Image (cartoon, rainbow, N blue to C red; front, side, top):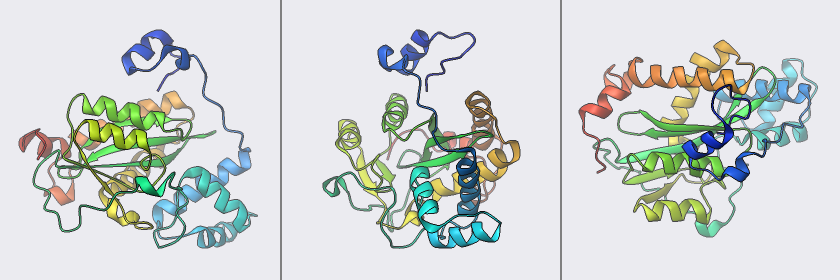
Length: 275
């Protein structure tokens, strides 16, 4: 993501490094128009949802009221839509699909994931800051749990997803890519990019965020072990903190499901070719 106030790297140089159009890079991202009160409520929604992802907007509204927030269901539902989240149970998907014709079946049920780059999972989550918020897109290798790549954005426009995927594919690519049915993934640009690289497309069943549980568990660990403990004040601090945590997660944090090996070690030991 372009950083307009970077002390040493020019916007032109950043655009070249990221492979994005230089003209668009000069446009500063729009700042959030949400009030400080709404941002505080969104931060609280994020904490509630991270702890209880099965809560929909009604239960989250009740929980917020119990904490002293004066909110109604309509307000909470709008903020959750802005955050791109919804409860894990059958209901209208708040991350609305752009076109149903772009939805693909879930391919992973009963699949024996045998090696790194067999399956990658992708998802987007809300990341809070002291005075605002950003969105994080992450790519996780499902065999090793390694974070393959990630990208931050101040908006939910799909460009940051495609930028990250193209960068990742320049190094490695999976046999299968799994996502939810959100609009970032149910669109022609996403599907054409995966087809260009001969990657099979898998999508979670509607209302079944548990289908992408490995990615969700990384987001949960990130928030409890990094974001909530540090409360980064601005995008620059957040980027630095996120870079430190991802390095720690991949190389130094033992993972229970890997018999307490690290994701980076498992990824490298089992070979770096797609199944």
